[in-house]
Amino acid sequence: MRAHSTHAVRFASSLLLLLLLLLLLLLLLRSGCLARHGSIGWLVELRRSTGVSERGRRLRVAHGHAPHGTNYNITLLTSLTHPSGYVVSNPRTATNTALDFLSFLVDLVQAGHLVSGDVLVCDNASIHFAAEIQAPLELLLAVTGIRLLFTPTYSPELNPCELVFAHIKNHIYAHRSPNNHLLVDIALASASISWWNILAYYSKCILHFDE
Image: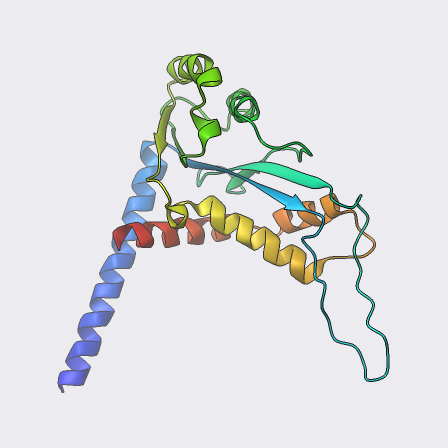
């Protein structure tokens, strides 16, 4: 009898937590966009270098079509108010800089992905508050009515962008094609992400925060 009672309490607690989580997400959608920003880079070496072949046959590993050592970087914005749940920048071969971050925000504002009342959450990467962009960044935020917040230091578990990047990387590892340029594989991996994936990633980060 005690076991059934314990099970019922756990079920009720889980249901209550789920309802509170859904309520919080609805409040975020109604009060303004809670958008998250992140960036990631790929080396061409991001590829599967092991595999399985039939006994007696040599294993051939496909490396794709991209110059050896080429580095690609993308910047990502996740948002539950966006139809797809995210916006991705064009890939770059150079390292992300503070000016790249500022340019991406300008593009998001011009495209209507960030509007007045939105809350933009970034991690504590130095490019997000570099001195060289402080003045124009503050002006952009003041003019557009966007609020900028930062997550605690060393807390990637609170950033759904990290889960999106993991999704993209896993997709590339699983579906890397010898006939595709790496950029094509990145695009296909990005296209495999749904709004429901983004919702699940936000939920997971909120649960981490609750812990």
